[in-house]
Image 1 (cartoon, rainbow, N blue to C red):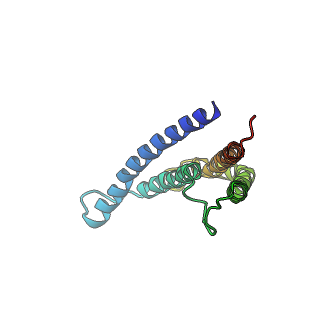
Image 2: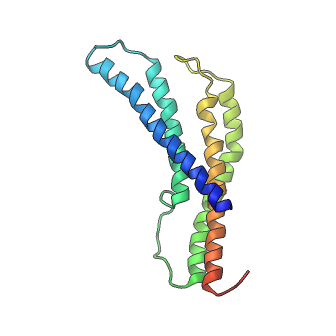
Image 3: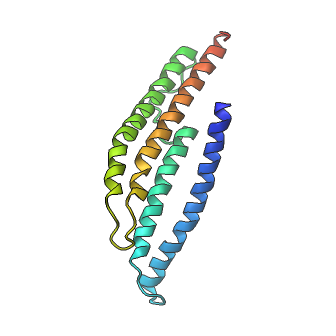
Length: 164
Protein backbone atom coordinates (compact mmCIF):
# COMPACT_ATOMS: atom_id res chain seq x y z
CA UNK A 1 0.00 0.00 0.00
CA UNK A 2 2.75 2.46 0.94
CA UNK A 3 4.89 1.45 -2.04
CA UNK A 4 1.96 1.87 -4.38
CA UNK A 5 1.24 5.35 -2.96
CA UNK A 6 4.88 6.39 -3.32
CA UNK A 7 5.01 5.03 -6.87
CA UNK A 8 1.87 7.04 -7.68
CA UNK A 9 3.52 10.14 -6.19
CA UNK A 10 6.58 9.50 -8.37
CA UNK A 11 4.37 9.18 -11.43
CA UNK A 12 2.75 12.52 -10.61
CA UNK A 13 6.21 14.04 -10.12
CA UNK A 14 7.40 12.63 -13.46
CA UNK A 15 4.39 14.08 -15.27
CA UNK A 16 4.94 17.41 -13.50
CA UNK A 17 8.61 17.32 -14.44
CA UNK A 18 7.75 16.66 -18.07
CA UNK A 19 5.31 19.56 -18.14
CA UNK A 20 7.82 21.88 -16.48
CA UNK A 21 10.61 20.99 -18.90
CA UNK A 22 8.19 21.60 -21.78
CA UNK A 23 7.19 24.92 -20.24
CA UNK A 24 10.84 25.85 -19.74
CA UNK A 25 11.31 25.82 -23.51
CA UNK A 26 8.99 28.78 -23.96
CA UNK A 27 10.78 31.51 -21.94
CA UNK A 28 14.21 30.22 -22.97
CA UNK A 29 13.22 30.24 -26.65
CA UNK A 30 11.86 33.76 -26.22
CA UNK A 31 15.18 34.86 -24.70
CA UNK A 32 17.22 33.32 -27.50
CA UNK A 33 15.01 34.73 -30.25
CA UNK A 34 14.96 38.19 -28.66
CA UNK A 35 18.71 38.34 -28.10
CA UNK A 36 19.95 36.96 -31.40
CA UNK A 37 17.32 37.87 -33.96
CA UNK A 38 15.56 41.00 -32.77
CA UNK A 39 12.22 39.63 -34.01
CA UNK A 40 10.64 40.15 -30.61
CA UNK A 41 11.62 42.63 -27.90
CA UNK A 42 13.73 41.55 -24.95
CA UNK A 43 11.39 40.68 -22.12
CA UNK A 44 13.17 40.58 -18.79
CA UNK A 45 10.44 38.56 -17.09
CA UNK A 46 11.36 35.54 -19.23
CA UNK A 47 14.64 35.14 -17.36
CA UNK A 48 12.89 35.11 -13.99
CA UNK A 49 10.26 32.66 -15.21
CA UNK A 50 12.96 30.38 -16.63
CA UNK A 51 14.79 30.52 -13.29
CA UNK A 52 11.63 29.68 -11.33
CA UNK A 53 10.85 26.72 -13.57
CA UNK A 54 14.46 25.54 -13.56
CA UNK A 55 14.60 25.49 -9.75
CA UNK A 56 11.50 23.29 -9.66
CA UNK A 57 12.91 21.00 -12.37
CA UNK A 58 16.15 20.52 -10.43
CA UNK A 59 14.44 19.81 -7.12
CA UNK A 60 11.83 17.44 -8.54
CA UNK A 61 14.60 15.72 -10.49
CA UNK A 62 16.61 15.26 -7.30
CA UNK A 63 13.59 13.73 -5.55
CA UNK A 64 13.08 11.28 -8.40
CA UNK A 65 16.79 10.46 -8.35
CA UNK A 66 16.52 9.49 -4.68
CA UNK A 67 13.61 7.21 -5.53
CA UNK A 68 15.53 5.61 -8.42
CA UNK A 69 18.83 5.39 -6.47
CA UNK A 70 20.61 7.28 -9.24
CA UNK A 71 21.81 10.54 -7.72
CA UNK A 72 23.04 10.52 -4.13
CA UNK A 73 24.81 7.18 -4.09
CA UNK A 74 28.49 7.06 -4.93
CA UNK A 75 29.62 3.46 -4.91
CA UNK A 76 33.08 3.31 -3.39
CA UNK A 77 32.98 -0.37 -2.51
CA UNK A 78 31.43 -3.06 -4.69
CA UNK A 79 28.20 -4.61 -3.43
CA UNK A 80 28.97 -7.33 -0.96
CA UNK A 81 27.83 -10.88 -1.46
CA UNK A 82 27.16 -11.05 2.28
CA UNK A 83 23.53 -9.90 2.84
CA UNK A 84 24.32 -8.26 6.18
CA UNK A 85 27.24 -6.23 4.78
CA UNK A 86 25.07 -5.26 1.80
CA UNK A 87 22.37 -4.09 4.22
CA UNK A 88 24.93 -1.98 6.08
CA UNK A 89 26.26 -0.48 2.83
CA UNK A 90 22.81 0.51 1.63
CA UNK A 91 21.64 1.61 5.07
CA UNK A 92 24.49 4.08 5.42
CA UNK A 93 23.54 5.73 2.14
CA UNK A 94 19.80 5.79 2.91
CA UNK A 95 20.28 7.12 6.42
CA UNK A 96 22.67 9.84 5.25
CA UNK A 97 20.28 10.93 2.51
CA UNK A 98 17.41 10.84 4.99
CA UNK A 99 19.43 12.88 7.45
CA UNK A 100 20.27 15.50 4.85
CA UNK A 101 16.62 15.47 3.79
CA UNK A 102 15.58 16.11 7.38
CA UNK A 103 18.04 19.02 7.62
CA UNK A 104 16.82 20.48 4.33
CA UNK A 105 13.25 20.18 5.58
CA UNK A 106 13.94 21.69 9.00
CA UNK A 107 16.07 24.61 7.86
CA UNK A 108 14.18 24.94 4.59
CA UNK A 109 11.04 25.99 6.43
CA UNK A 110 12.73 29.19 7.63
CA UNK A 111 14.21 29.63 4.17
CA UNK A 112 10.72 29.36 2.66
CA UNK A 113 9.35 31.85 5.20
CA UNK A 114 12.13 34.23 4.20
CA UNK A 115 11.16 33.79 0.55
CA UNK A 116 7.54 34.43 1.45
CA UNK A 117 8.29 38.03 2.40
CA UNK A 118 10.17 38.80 -0.82
CA UNK A 119 9.05 39.49 -4.37
CA UNK A 120 10.88 39.15 -7.66
CA UNK A 121 11.95 42.28 -9.48
CA UNK A 122 10.41 41.86 -12.92
CA UNK A 123 7.36 39.66 -12.37
CA UNK A 124 6.63 40.83 -8.81
CA UNK A 125 6.03 37.17 -7.95
CA UNK A 126 6.33 36.00 -4.37
CA UNK A 127 9.66 34.17 -4.00
CA UNK A 128 7.97 31.51 -1.90
CA UNK A 129 7.41 29.93 -5.34
CA UNK A 130 11.05 28.90 -5.48
CA UNK A 131 12.01 28.86 -1.81
CA UNK A 132 9.39 26.23 -0.96
CA UNK A 133 11.26 23.73 -3.14
CA UNK A 134 13.92 23.23 -0.45
CA UNK A 135 11.67 21.84 2.32
CA UNK A 136 9.52 20.08 -0.30
CA UNK A 137 12.49 18.21 -1.75
CA UNK A 138 14.01 17.58 1.69
CA UNK A 139 10.81 16.02 2.98
CA UNK A 140 10.52 13.74 -0.02
CA UNK A 141 14.22 12.78 0.18
CA UNK A 142 13.60 11.82 3.78
CA UNK A 143 10.44 9.83 3.06
CA UNK A 144 11.91 8.05 0.04
CA UNK A 145 15.20 7.19 1.72
CA UNK A 146 13.44 5.85 4.82
CA UNK A 147 11.22 3.73 2.60
CA UNK A 148 14.28 2.45 0.72
CA UNK A 149 15.93 1.67 4.08
CA UNK A 150 12.88 -0.36 5.15
CA UNK A 151 12.86 -2.09 1.78
CA UNK A 152 16.55 -3.00 2.11
CA UNK A 153 15.86 -4.41 5.57
CA UNK A 154 12.99 -6.50 4.16
CA UNK A 155 15.30 -7.84 1.45
CA UNK A 156 17.84 -8.73 4.13
CA UNK A 157 15.19 -10.50 6.21
CA UNK A 158 13.96 -12.47 3.21
CA UNK A 159 17.53 -13.47 2.28
CA UNK A 160 18.06 -14.86 5.78
CA UNK A 161 14.79 -16.75 5.72
CA UNK A 162 13.35 -14.71 8.60
CA UNK A 163 9.58 -14.51 8.51
CA UNK A 164 7.44 -11.71 9.82
